[in-house]
Length: 219
Image (cartoon, rainbow, N blue to C red; front, side):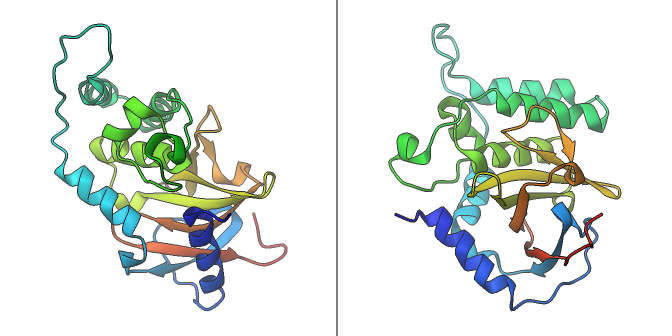
C-alpha cells in the first residue's frame, strides 16, 4: 500500500513537468538537477505544522534530576549547540550531522502509529525517527547556530539504488552544496552523490521542484 510520503513524492513528480525553472541564489544544480521555485507552502501541511510546533517550543525540559532516564534532551541539545558555536562552519556541519545521526532510525508507524509524521527535535531525540526527522533536527540545529533559511533545504529525493524516497538536509556553501544524510557518516558535496534524484526541496520560505538538466549537463 502506498504511504502518504510516497503519494506526495508522486504528486510532485507529476507537477514538475508543468513548471519552468527560475534562477535562485542557492546553487541551482542540486544533484545535477534544475530547480523551479514555488511559494505556496500550503501544499505541505506536515512541514507547516513542524514550523508551528517548533516556534511554540520553549525548549525546556521537565525534571532533570532523574539520573536513570535521559529526559533532558532539550538541555543537552542546546548545550551541544552552544559548545560548537565557536567552531568553523565545516566543523559545525560535521558535528550537527554526527549528533543527530547517533539517534536510532525508527519508522513513524512504530513511533506514532501512522505512516508519515514529521517530528520536531523534542519528539525526535527521545524517540529516534525516520529520514525526514533526522533532516528536520539538523535544519533547526543550524538555524539555532545562525544559518539563514535561504542557505538550507530539506530535500526529498528518490534513492535510485534502492528505489525508495529518502530525505536529507542540503546546505549551500558558496558554489557548493553540502549534504547532511542520516545514511552517511561524513558531510559530502552534492556532486559526490550519484544515486539521489531530487524531487522537491523546502525551507521556511519556499519550496522547489527539481527536474533533470538533460543528458550531458551534469558537472
